[in-house]
Length: 293
Image (cartoon, rainbow, N blue to C red; front, side, top):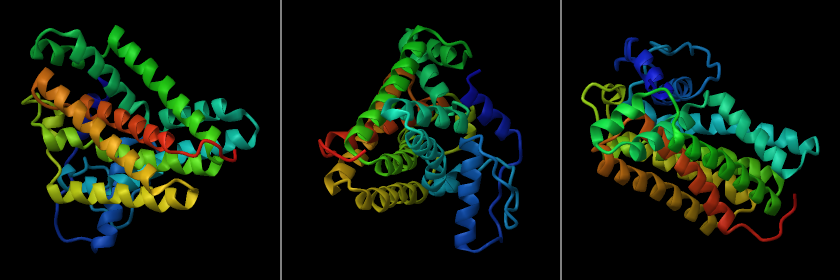
């Protein structure tokens, strides 16, 4: 069983967080961010004093409104690794490798696992049923290995290329913004598609409400503009990055609909990876050709 599905299944065995009297709006939002950070990463997140059930499975219909904040925290791990490697004089390529490696450790290869399983399933099976069976197989096949290799190479290449045009701090901030935006993109399959399985963990997780997704999308945009405009990225570059990321998630959702008739947790992980790559590519496309490093 893929790690993404295993985690969702294990979390689903725990009681789900229930709505009810609790902290005010600001603290409730912070609690949702903590819940998302626990679910989407391996980072140690202490129980907050105002959380009713800190170790329960997040209520995905509501909690994902705070996902960009959790994504930014995950991206900060990669950003700090990049800055440390740059400060030690490792050069842009090795610094980019350090950033991606830090992100892999921070998330436990959560999204990358979904990407590999998606590639194996969608292109390794001849029927929807067979594709779903392959996606549940924990073994990595040829399509998955190729997709994962290309994913890591492209991400390292984009970060290194961006660092060649922009200052190190600007590149680090781009990693934070990309992590926030791409995790919102990972919600698109849940919003646009029905579950591909009637008994899957993704089915049990439920669907984000329109309001929760709108809040997440707005939060991703706010984080991107607040971080990247002062860092020297142009307005159009940020708009292009956000548009390409959203298009990547929507495009993958269309493929999933055609191939398996719906979404799974693996599809969401693949959408996040596609969104991160598309976001960084958008920034790079309109980044200055000459920048301090």
